[in-house]
Image: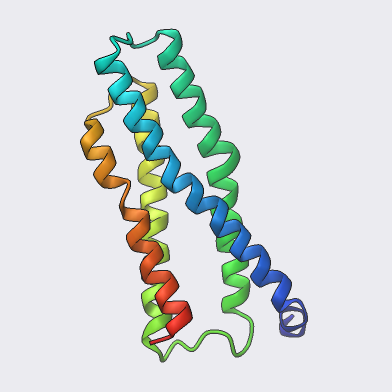
Amino acid sequence: MTDLLIDYYLWIKAMHVMSVLAWMAGLFYLPRLYVYHVEGLKKQGVVPGSEMDLLFRHQERLLMKAIMQPAMISSWLFGLMLVFTPGIVDWEMTWSWAKAAAVIGMTGYHFYLEVARKRFAAEENRLTGRQWRMLNELPTLFMIVIVISVIVKY
């Protein structure tokens, strides 16, 4: 098995990077949709259950189910394949643990967004547009930790 991982290392790495890019795009865009959803409902007088509300719900669901979840799963799959490739990850170095913690945090954030999506669908959103804007910065912080960890390997 390890020979297979070594032989296909660059392909696995490429698939991991593409998966992470798709996942990150969703992590950045979904909270922005939530901002528009909240502000559209308040400022534009959009009524819950209206065509606009249903359009937002549909977009949010498709983004999560068709892009974000498959991208997260493939990111984890290819990432774990890289972890098990001999000589790639040194668990005695800080960078490995920093990246692992950031990836786990990003995964938790992903699941939080899914819970929020279900709250929007049930008309139970509790956050303002401003709060969603602030939460939208979390993936950037995770990305900074991950990229610096992997590139600089401190």
